[in-house]
Amino acid sequence: MEYNTNTVTRRERDCLVILEEDSRDDFPVRLHEIALTLNVKPPTALNVVRRLERKGLAESRDGMIILTESGEKVAKSILLVHRTYESLLCQSGVPANSACQEAAEVDYIIPEGDAKLILKKIGNPKKCPHGKPIQEVDEE
Image 1: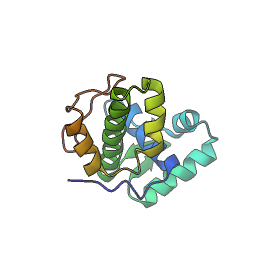
Image 2 (image 1 turned 180 degrees about the vertical axis):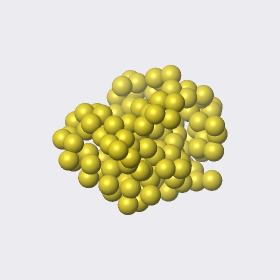
Image 3 (image 1 turned 120 degrees about the horizontal axis):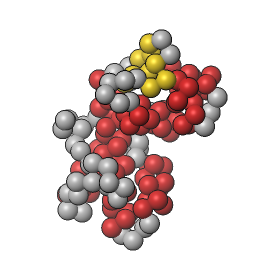
Image 4 (image 1 turned 120 degrees about the vertical axis):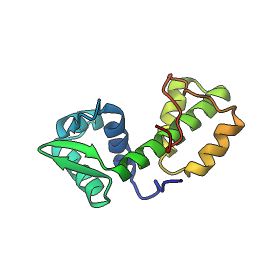
């Protein structure tokens, strides 16, 4: 199943990725951690979280933020696109750090289906250039 990521802004994308990558063993991320990682003040981070809550992608409990099931799927879709596009760029000769930065500019815009086609075309790598797993959204 393909998840629509076109309804999130760049800042929301960044927050979703933080929530997906920084939560450990189902331990939520604190609002303060989001603000630090986004390099914004806590009220700005709170506004982003509230927008994600209105979209049904995140929930906040006692200063801790977690992804909803829908939010987790959107975040994983973004990461699939990111790591696929990053791999494509690296295979084309772009240095890994530059590829990562470029992928972050478009990973929330490129449809997941397109990323899956690219993934097949580049040989279905299991990891991105930084060693993080490339997983389809429905995979566990």
